Length: 113
Length: 121
Image 1: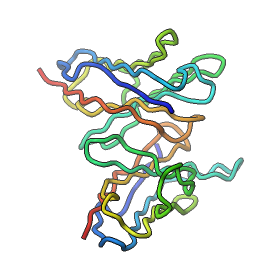
Image 2: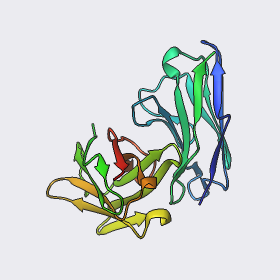
Image 3: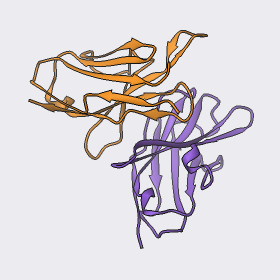
Image 4: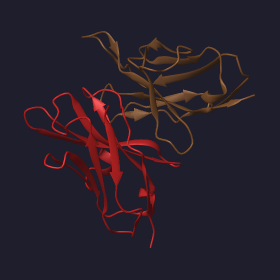
């Protein structure tokens, strides 16, 4: 199985400041045949299911604010929130869909400092 | 807009069978461009993919090794729904269970509302 490891486990950032969450996969999630990274990011607020925010490592889902961006390749990926808003408080997960079993990171809890 | 509505018991006794159903609106369970998944979430195991079904001229079923001996996912085209059965449950199966669509066997979107299932006598 591909193991997804996120860092940090929790993060406190001031409103308007940048938040950066890292995700490392135990093996590549890049399909060389199409040059796509099979990596997604989700946001989960209390009492709600996870919500897709990024796919193909860097493509923002429709309706997601442009302060959210994804980057990285191979085995190292990053989710960046450029200017933290109060509504961004949540747990964030990375997930690989390169191969089954699909696996998730353990989550990063983002709070306001 | 695809929506998934889950239903099923919230309490299951140990050794019995957990059964959940997910009704699809806005798409078809026999779509050639989607897969239908079950994922669970618990404090101890995090988000865990359990399995999926999808139709590509015939039905396919994939299951996580951790539950492969106990799980069945079925698709019901007449009701446009899919279901999860997990046999011989133990308290470790206590979790919030989600049904989830995967477009083109890729990321997960959307998710059902979630069903808390507690395994307890």
